[in-house]
Length: 191
Image 1 (spheres, rainbow, N blue to C red):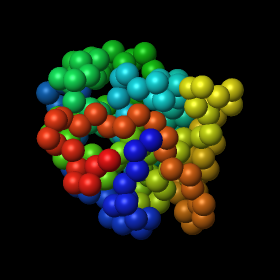
Image 2 (image 1 turned 120 degrees about the horizontal axis):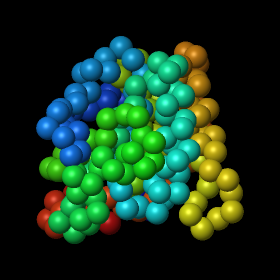
Image 3 (image 1 turned 30 degrees about the vertical axis):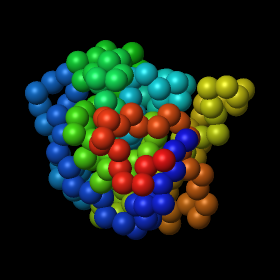
Image 4 (image 1 turned 60 degrees about the horizontal axis):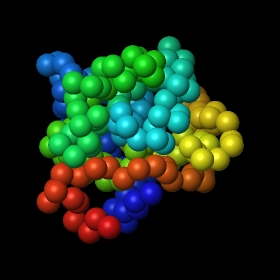
């Protein structure tokens, strides 16, 4: 997993963004979530860490949306280097995984940079005031361990934000594949 020292702090404001829905000409704007809690997921089509959690992620996000959580996913990977992450391939992956939320394409990679996103999946949960409430892992399961995919860590954070409780005191960072930056577009200090 790639790490950065410039993480968006808990309580920090969500960067504003407008991006196209992958494989579509429609746009989605963060302003449409104003006054509602919002889950922003940096994911992609090919990452084994994302594929490992995708079915459970799809199921849980459908439940959370019924409870009032807005959900959006963003693919910031370079499709020139990783053609399986091209925007025209995103709708098929969303259907396969059961994603019932906008799956956006960040072709300029500017939104990933604004969030200081480093990997897929990278998970950011904002409260109804647009302040970062949780930035951490989905759960302890990984493609090569035997732990079940539960979504426990993110589920606890979502329950807390929906119930108006405080953010989790302790979080574990997301683990996954690094975002695939276009050559020469890597964030400053990228390792």
